[in-house]
Amino acid sequence: MISLSRILFTGLFALALIACSEQASVSDSSASMTQAANSASASVVSRWYSDEQQALGSEVFTQNCAVCHGAQAQGTVEDWRARLDDGSFPPPPLNGSAHAWHHPQEILLQVVNYGGESLGGKMPAFIDVLDDAEKLAAIAYFQSFWTDDIYQQWMQMGGTN
Image (tube, rainbow, N blue to C red):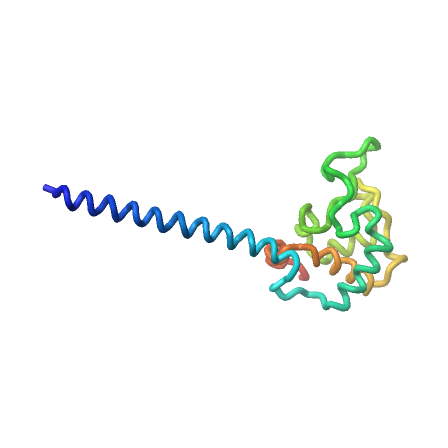
């Protein structure tokens, strides 16, 4: 038969484990939130583009894309999934909060080159407006707003392949 002291010891041990795991959980949660906040400002994951490409991309994006996609690629409408009155889709955010990160670089370049009309949007074609370096720089710029987690998922799904 199990003694009362053994049951008491087991119960206290279990409570101590629970208390320790709750403290670790709160601590881990705080660390995760801090890490997520910091990742937007300082990427620790190696990216395909250089600082120079990102800087050029900022200029290209500001001059050609920001009016529709927002200055920091955040979008300009509340719900980018809802069709506009004319039946077209509004420009989506490109900052990692929509679907741009679901597409490899090749597809992103196709959309920049040929526009979004065939996809139900109004984006004009930039094939004869921007050179290849400017197009890649614009992509680098909006990808600079992606968290490391989003960027890593993009790379795992084919990213630059």
